[in-house]
Length: 347
Image (cartoon, rainbow, N blue to C red):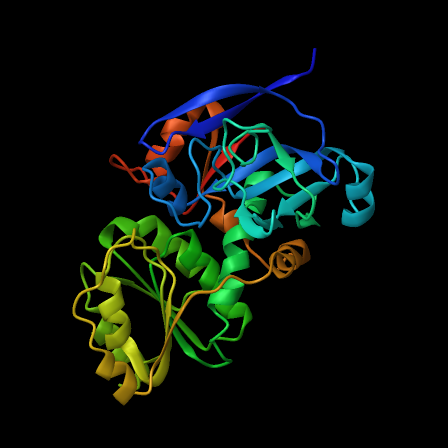
């Protein structure tokens, strides 16, 4: 009898369950991953509630797209194409081209259809042909190394930052913190991070990983703070990394300089933004663009080099059996429920 394993399954209707699966054999051209840890993010909360952000999202599904694990078994074709072997620790690119379309692990594969195990919220995970895998260092805990995923996006999100720039990050969650680190590596001259009074732990972390100034918007006017720091010149690049709230979009326009750049990254659960005057973009020569992810290879390279303070952004970790507590921590439900990052730990 084949070995059994467990995985968390989201219904898409605000409920979850732990299911048992048989550990599968590698598909032709693919592999099986023994998951060590998976990072959790706001898109997982959305998915839990049935809000989707991928074109091919399907329910029920095993969530999890920020996955670190070890190659458990692999097909001969994958061994040759991926240059990995059994036991290697790897990071995954969650997107792959399959059946003529882009599919995303943790979002676009049904938990009801074989093989079912296509997300990081499980003890094992199926890797299909064409999956991009990158070897990770061995000397750090897996739940630190899941930071490769937000860093992958952050490398692209800060592409507009030039050496010496004044860079403002709104939202000190794990994506905002990743952008602070990436912007510092890109040579930003001054980094300002804004958050609310509930973000104390995260604002402290922002200072630790490279922010020059942090602003509690419940106490200070962030526009005036940026004006005072820059002598009225305002910021070269303003990034909105805040989830759900649309107020930060308006603040982007208030904090950016003429001919500056606004980068929109934080997901708003499809809520419209009222009161944006497009003439302001035209007459002030602004660049407004959606955040675009970077390369997994670059993020893994930075982590493997030791350039990333992964310990400072490790946050809180929970075993699979405590997924409900992990989701509560992710949503900051209850007093004192906060962490700079939340992970599920499988081993």
